[in-house]
Length: 256
Image (tube, rainbow, N blue to C red; front, side, top):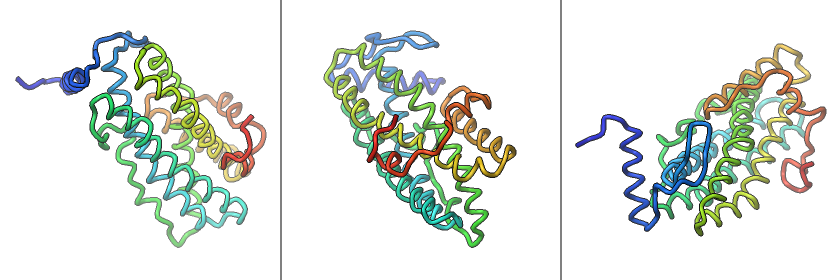
């Protein structure tokens, strides 16, 4: 008999796939605000994170190209091109090689766009147009949205996944912990720095109205993956007093 509840149907599938791999899906490995989380819950989260990370590849690739067509000073344009181009590759790696691989080893298939918290990640609207000012406006708007997503991932999602892996004594969990520590967290930290770089170079000089718009774009991104919105005081604190350096954005200097 078919499930009327799609979430219940998905969980039934998860139980079956995990069991087929010899993994106990009902083993409780942690807790969240909404209650205890079992291995099947972790499995579902990994599918969502893998799909969401992979979806970030398209927009960041598009932003890299848009940065070169937005009338920015050459140093800023080149920095954003390099940083977003690198982020695009890293997002794909996180989706495929880190979270996607763990999901597969637990019984999942290649995550699909319907599992993503942000949709497919299509970025046709980011294709550069003839109006450099409009290109810059689109660049700033999506940079805020992506920054909101990245701040929630870095400060909320990944710590939750780490705590669940720590509660599950299994080779998949141990390997995922190492990959998050050694690869994902450092790279995601740099992705947040791009959000700060855009703020200091493109947004802050334009005054309070544009700052407020960037904050709202950031909160739009945070809401997309279930994060709490930022107030203006917290937002200002997170932006810091100065832009990160190019070397920090590209991982050549340690982020303090």
